[in-house]
Length: 104
Image (cartoon, rainbow, N blue to C red; front, side):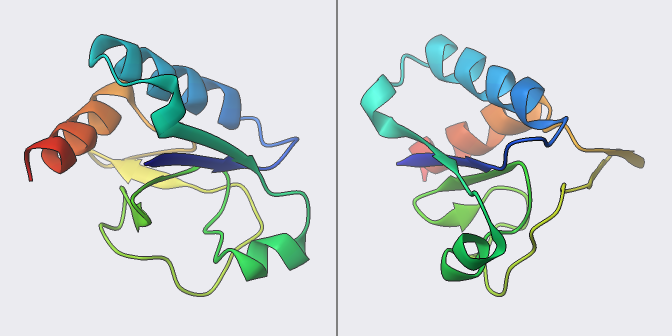
């Protein structure tokens, strides 16, 4: 199960979700394998160990940290890819991690 977590108002969520949906279409992953979860407040963030917006989990594992989330962070998430900081999860990074999961 792929879970996309975000909160309303995060400027990077839409582009990251678009990247995720493009990848899942390319890989022929059924829509029922994808869950889009809006985290509306800090209480929900704490309850769900939310790591920030946007976050992608595959079977509960954060694709960026490759670990199960602990603690929580209710803010826009910043990633580092190839030495560049961004809030958008790149399409190729998403694809590589989904493929790793499917092959693993």
